[in-house]
Image (cartoon, rainbow, N blue to C red; front, side, top):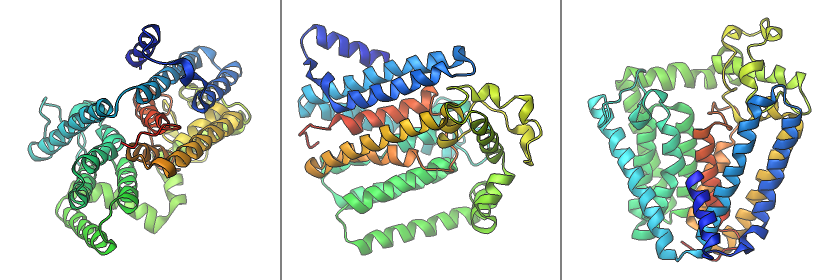
Length: 379
């Protein structure tokens, strides 16, 4: 983000770009969200913790505006080169994941400490599935636009879903399969019967893997599917560690209903004595750096004011994006929109929205999503 901000400043001083870009609706939306964070900062329980995250958002604003400026000023061929670089990096990650699936460690020697999970380049963090989800549609879009082959695109879509399944990150698998299915339904021009046949075959493949691999069966069936299908959502909320995070986040929100405890203050508040006796089987494990769910995170840390501000911000962005997409049918814009939309899926565990890694992937996709607003490029 720092680098792309420096590119923006350099471009302005060298007169490569026009200042007109700063008068667009996207900038106003970003500033609206930033000022809502500033107001939240005033009411933060511990301002010293919130301050760095709030002002980091200035870097995010700069990087988004810079990206939009690049898209506006560069030729289509150069923009395509950027997506080609993303395509190559993603392909390297895919090959690395396959290498680890086969040999048990990645090309740098990293290996997962958890059965049924893939580490790849994320090492002990075990979150390569989030990156995979964030860039999978850009990969498919690049193939679709440069090779114009619907059959190849469908095969690759099924392949990416399979790889996401084998990575073993359940929440990110749900997000990945959701966005790829939506992409195939709305973009791929193959007849519906072939789509149904292809994804039916995929389901059969998953069933074979689940019946032949105990690690995947444990993660996707014993620990997850049965909870959702047999016991229900309430059982999940009341009897899992994630449920304990959500539960204490709910209580923090109730105690700070209007402005929340402050951005990044969950890591302090969740350890508080007042929450030691909450009625939850896993309450002793309630405390963490974040609630592991974006909606609980916003409600507990920014309250109703911050949550409503974010809802206004994101739905206004969606409106402008879809309005532009209907006119120009930009595939990269639609891909980014799907990722941002699915990132806001409720209940599913997620990384901290205000962390560097999670927010980096979110805001990069948001930047692509809004870069083409009032822009006629059809890449």
